[in-house]
Amino acid sequence: MARDFLAGCNDEYDVVVIGSGLAGLTAANLLGRAGHRVLLLEQHYKLGGLATWFRRPKSHIFDISLHGFPYGMVKSCRRYWNQDIADRIVQLKHIRFDNPMFSLTTTFNRDDFTRLLSTRFGIDPARVQEFFDTARGMNFYDDQEMTTRELFDRFFPGREDVVRLLMEPITYANGSTLEDPAITYGIVFSNFMAKGVFIYEGGTDDLINRMHRELRRNGVDCRIRCDVSRVEVGPRGVRAVVVNGRRIRCRAVVSNSNLRSTIFQLVGEEKFDKNFVEQAREVRLNNSSTQVYMGLKEGVEVDESTGDLLFSSTAPVFRTDLLLSRDITSRTFSFYYPRTRPDQKPRYAIVSSTNARYEDWANLSDEEYEASKRELIETTLDALDKYVPNIRQKVDHVEAATPRTFQHYTKHQLGASFGTKFEGLAVSRALPDQVPGLYHAGSVGIIMSGWLGAINYGVIVANDVDQRLMRGQAIPAGNQTA
Ligand SMILES: Cc1cc2nc3c(=O)[nH]c(=O)nc-3n(C[C@H](O)[C@H](O)[C@H](O)COP(=O)(O)OP(=O)(O)OC[C@H]3O[C@@H](n4cnc5c(N)ncnc54)[C@H](O)[C@@H]3O)c2cc1C
Image (cartoon, rainbow, N blue to C red; front, top):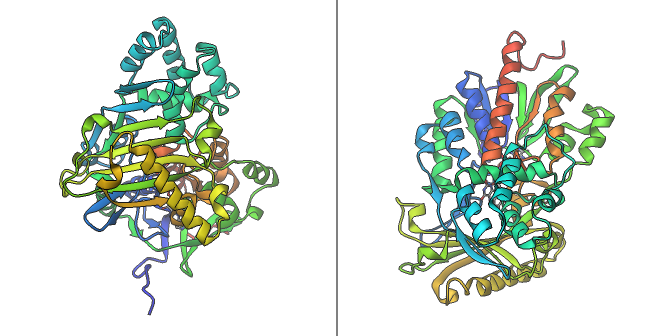
């Protein structure tokens, strides 16, 4: 008989969280901590969403999205998770760039960028300060018309090398382009510049296990392999979810599923007004990625001067379309030294990531798909050989993930790595005005994407839900039709 992943589940909760990405986990944790009855439903066989990892024979563990986040994670993890998690966040000190315009290593913070921009790129330090202050002063309520390209033109006209230094890592970090609103750049860039790039020591598996423990401590009922097929909406708002063929009543739903899937598949467009549906249709999904995971043989070492994060490119200039092209010229290599997982067997791993378009991979036949993955692996090994000589003799496990892989595991439409573009944020925030009790927390709008953005968005939405639940305490779940 098939296993019942909902065994022992109640028929009713205050809130159901659909999806266990970092936003869903954080929203569930805070609502549980606030004393609400919370059910967290994840369709995959493990928690974490894109914050995930996988194991392979010979003690290899690969992280999918643990490449770097801003220092703000320390505060967010301390406040909304626990001190233990916050204490494991460590800085990556060797951020390397290698492209036809320049090769350099930086600690990727304001002081070091100011030094580089003035000494190596010859920019007047006063101009650099002005740029940093402008980027830092940006907030969501600012003018959203100015594009990132216009921002750069204002401060560094004609300096494509400077644009490349400032933009390439951010495009990699959240898929934003020169054509996106400048605030999406300014906020994320300033977050990194505050102190540099950080990761979680212990690996994603350790982080998610600790989060799971904290969720249990806060009374959250967490279920994996629970694919929500429907959010049931009555005349007065959310009433229940349908999951694995069972109906579970609730007063509120936080969907961590892709925004577009939430509206058009889980709820259904007939539940929203026409203008809103039009606005939701206009929301563009973010791009996807390919990755190549390489595990080094036991005993093989890589010198730490190779870098923690290496933005490599053979393209003569920086252009967004080149970054997305199947003809790959830019790769970001993440080097995982044994210190990434101090409690595990000493192992080195390297992950190469490249932004990609879903459509370039979607319609390949099985043979074409396998051949394309093979080609991706071979060209990646060729590119890496420049930084780790004889890499082919050093690896004993290599495999690739494509936009199809990301879609398969997370149900993100088109395998989107960072949810939606900027316009998704307004649509996400407007959901409860359309359907009382319906919320979305998850990657939208660049600012609310990535590990830190997703966690912080989970916090914002948890506060909204908490207020609603406190207001409506008297109404039993599932009875909002009265
Ligand atoms: C290759 C790659 C590299 C990245 N690198 C970085 C990085 O270095 N730094 C950084 O900060 N960010 C990085 N990111 C982005 C970051 O991982 C994401 O922005 C963040 O983890 C997304 O969190 P989320 O809460 O939006 O949910 P997601 O991680 O998207 O999770 C959504 C969850 O909902 C579940 N779900 C969906 N539909 C249903 C349903 N109907 N029923 C039940 N469950 C459902 C999915 O299975 C999934 O678990 C990277 C992303 C990718 C793809």
